[in-house]
Amino acid sequence: MNPIEESAVQDFLQILEDHRKNCEQSGKYVEAEIAKNRFEDIKQHEECRRLESMKARHIAEKLGLEEANMLEFQQLTATWEKTNADFERSSENSIESMKQKHCEEWEEFQKRILAKQLKPKFSTELLNYRKIQDHLAKAKDYNEAHKVKAKADKLEALDMERWLQKRQEGISQQEENWKQQKQQEMSALQKRIQTNLEAQKKQRSLEFDRLNQRYQNVKNELDAQHKLERLRIERQ
Image (cartoon, rainbow, N blue to C red; front, side):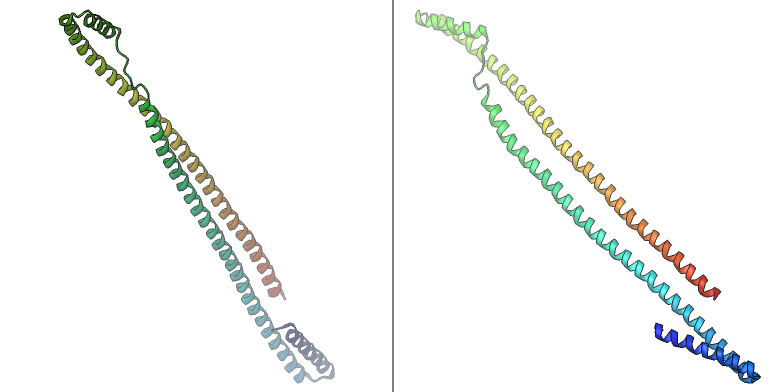
């Protein structure tokens, strides 16, 4: 019922009340009784109508609050889903970029390490044998030169074997050190990503908690207002 209709009802009740008083003063008690009953019926009907109207309005206000909260919840959820997707994509890109960087650095590392120590370093004993071998050959003492050369060749083979083994051990150790360093870099990146992810989860939880708390505060306030309105109507 709109305000104009409510005003008309109140005017009609006032007319009935005035009519009852006039009938009472004039001794028209039958008409006064009819006016009184009519007044009470209309007043009771109006109170029931106002109570039902209030209940319907309260329900509509609660539904409106819940719909507004649900809409805000959905918007916040959509925002965080996008944020999470962007973060996951960015994290994957960072990891892939580091893997690609490590692959390129590995190729450069292999080139540098293989370019070192291309010539073996022979022992002093071997170098002395070679000098003796050359001296004997120049002196045309070929038999002795041949004997010395055989010893020098055998010693050179041993020197070469030891050098190759030591070189390979050195390369293996350098490769292991390089791999450990790159693993540390990857672990540090993953740790940063995990730390940021935890902070993001905490922020997400905080925002949803705030949303829920705002809803509960408004709901409690609305319930209190509705309770006071019901009490006012019931006391009338």
